[in-house]
Length: 65
Image (tube, rainbow, N blue to C red; front, top):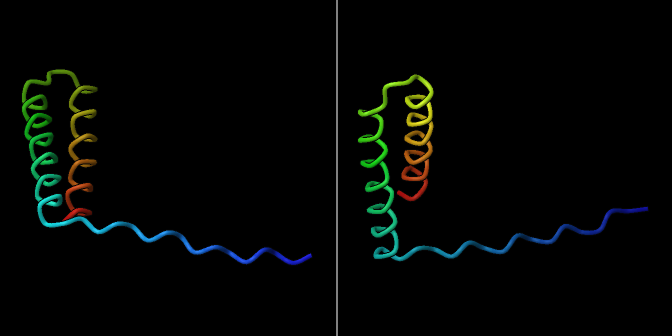
């Protein structure tokens, strides 16, 4: 038996400059909120959760730009 030929993945839609800038603004706004929560955090688990969320948002921002 042979394997079936692999089908190509559909191409991703490119974002326009306006869509890209809106997405960047959204991510930056979320980052600001997480930073504010991080400053208020007292317990270690809350600080860790905030840092994880911040890293995730930074990765998203890097991917968009």
